[in-house]
Structure formats: C-alpha cells, structure tokens
Image (cartoon, rainbow, N blue to C red; front, side):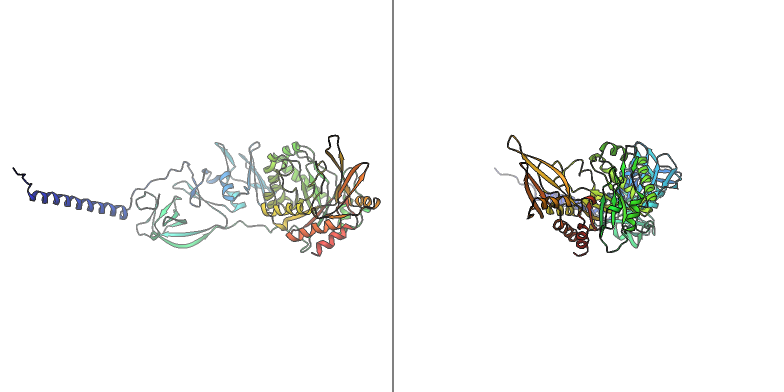
Length: 574
C-alpha cells in the first residue's frame, strides 16, 4: 500500500497563477490610486442654495436670500443685523411696518411698501420700497450702503449676491492655469467643480482649509481651489462711508463734570434764593415728564432759571422722566411714531429754552421694554447731537430688581449716550426692612466697578451720582419682640441741627466708610449714617480712582452750603 503524491508541476502552475493575479491586482490598485490622486473630476455642478438669490458673506451662505426689484438688491434685515454686529442697528416694527436705521449721527425712517422716507427729519429719496415677503422684511441696498458702507455685488449669471463690509480687507488672486482653475466642493481634485475660472480672472480668498484655498469665484460660488492654481495679486479694501465729525459732548477740556439735579415740584425754585454753587458747571432741573402712552410730554421749564444758570457759567441739561409709570412707558416706547414724537418735542423744548442737554431718567420700567428703551435712545441721540445737545441717562446700580434694574441694558445704552449717571444711592431705600446707609462706600465702589467691568461702559462716559441726603431710621420693638423699621429723608443741614441740638458725637463707621450717630427718642432708637465732607470726599476719591468723567449730586435742596466747596476742591485736587 502507498499514497500517490500529486505532481510537482501542478503546484508550480498554481503558484504562478496566484502570482499573476496578485501582480494584476497590485497594478490595478496602483492605477486606481493614481487615478484618484492625479486625474481630476471633470464634473461641473450648479450648487443648490435654496434661494433664487443666495447671499454670500465671507464665503458662507447666509440664512436668507435677497430680492431683486428694478435692478436694485433688497436685503433681509436679519442678515444685515447679523453682519453689522451685535448692536443690530436696523429696527423693524411689525405693527406699523416702520423701519428705523441708526448710526452715531444719522436716523433713517422708512416703511414697507412706501417710497417716503426721512433722514434726520429731512426727506430721503428711495427708488425702491422696502417690503415684507413670506414673513421676511427686506430693505434696499442704497441706504444700507450709504449709512453702513455695506457693498453688494450681484452675479447675473448665477443670481448670487456677495456682501462686503465697510473697512474689510480681502486678498485677491488670479486663476493661474492656462485652461482655467477649478473651484470644487471640497479639498480634493476628485470633488465636483462648482465653477471653472478662466485664466487671469479674479477670485477672493476667504481663508485656507485642509491645505486648500477657500475662495469665491466671479460667479459668486464659494469652494476650494488648489494653491498652485491661484496667483496672489492685491488686497481689496472696501471703502467705509463718509463719517461726520464726532460730536464733542463736553467742550471744557480737562474740567470734570460737576452736576447737580434741581428737583422741581409744584413751585418753581427762586434763583435769587439758591446762592452760589461753587464749582457746579451743570444743573439738571426735573422739567419734563411723559404724560401718556401717546408720547405727550409735559414741560414746566422756567426761562428765568435758565438765564440764572447761564449767568453763573452753568449748562442746563433738563431731565426727562417717565413719571415712573410702567404702563404709559410701555405704550410710548413700543411705537416708532411715538418715539419720534417724543424726540421732536424734546428738541423743540431745547430750542425754546436754550438748553444744552437732555438727561433721561426712566425708572420702574418693565423688563420686556428693555430693547425698546435702547432703541429710543439710539434714535434720540443722533437727532439731539445734530442740535448740539448732550445726551445722558440715569441708571441704577446693578441688582436683581425686575422694575428698577433688569430693564437697563447698560452696555447698549453706554454705546448710545454721551454720559451715564450711576445713581449710587438707596442701597437702603425708604421702605427698606432694615436700617442702614443710603450708600456705603464699598457698595458705591462696587456699583461703579461692575458697570465698567461687566458692561464695558468706558470710564470717561460715567458720572458718579452721590447723595446729599441721608435717612433718619427709627427702630421700634413690636409686640412679638421683633424690630419695626421706618425712615424719613433728611438733608445735610437738618442732620447737622439734630447733632447740635442733641449734643451727639459722630463716630466713624469702618464698615460703611461714613460718620454715624444714634440716639433714643420717645422710646425708639434713631440711627443716622451721615452724608458730610468725609463721605463726599471718599466718594470723589472713588471717581478719581476709576478715571470717570465727573460727579453728580441728588439733589440741590439737600445741600449744606459749604459742601459745594468741598466737592470742587476734591474734584480738582485728587
């Protein structure tokens, strides 16, 4: 018995077949690799953007497309506000169809479906009306370019609109290949082409991705171009719109602002009884108040007071209040026509009474009105500046109070106004459940610092508002053994008289940075954190520390006559 072995010749033949097919496979793989690496994709596709006129911004497709009317481009407001920055300078009011476009020096009013418009209260000619289509509001490019310097290019062959921003610098290149350079959907020669750029034609370079240039071609399509295919040429610089001379709010260079409010109630103050306000260079009488939701402003200005102030070398920045009435404030701020009416009334008052500024004091406002208050100030400031008027606004220290703090967008307001008065008082307010300082020094500094640091309001726009009043706190034990607290305001002279009459000796309170007294009267404990030379000097030291524009005082009637010299000396002698 034996086993027959297969012939060796057969084994060799099988091995040869395997070697042959292996070599063929390797050759095919090399060819396929070479094909993928060196043979470009010749397919040309037309990208689908979802819009008839897609908008390109820095090579990226915007969320909405443009319209074309009578050869003029119309752009969506939301896209424009996105590219123009977080301030969103173009405002649309759905109820009235009003559109308001603002800059530092201009306010343009227009409406959808209307060729009537005004810029800074003067007629403005439109050739195409703004319109609303499918829930999107579009504005013509002409005023956008005039106000913001935005340039729009329209590629007729593809319908693509390219937006270029004022001051933007863009690297240009020419297609360098003899047969034209390809713009592809991705960073590979195997990706389809979206545009074939003839030799010598210009492309914009928006960046570099995965070793390829990310470009936009003459037809407006963005995509990828191989670096060797592009020859860098020049930098394209988009022109900025012509700017007006910046408004100079405070023309007394190097002199800090020293403002005091004049609280005007039923009786006009008699200038002959005021006396010398040494060092005060601005007075702000509380003359104007919003009366209703239609924007009617009640005025009680006094020409005699203005003449007196000017004779003393003081400017008059009249205060405009909302009366601390939230309902009427909501109604007045919500309508573009009403806001414009308020602005026109303030301008008329300023011209009539020879005012130098308007001080806005809106308080007790619903948080839902936050954006509308900013819009009002953005519309107000350029028009008041045109009349040479200074615009300031009063803000409370930051807190969680719904109606007294959260409605204030201090960052946005700080960009719009000339000055922001930080009302650093009422840390303990009239009905506070506990007695305490009206404005302790640490709380005052923190209030100022937070607005500078968190809201980025420049120090040279800030004015520290200081109290000339304090509160006399009365603490009484109730039947349950608790403490019932009440208070009444008191000016500086009244506190001085109490200290003298009761022969009290003030003690410096380290916690608040103020002098303090307490006394018992009718079985109740009375406590006073005193406003005097000591506290005022310390507050002004805070103003110097942060390099702000000056100080203000609420209000003139709470004075002791010598305090004006104290403020003046402290302001000018850091």
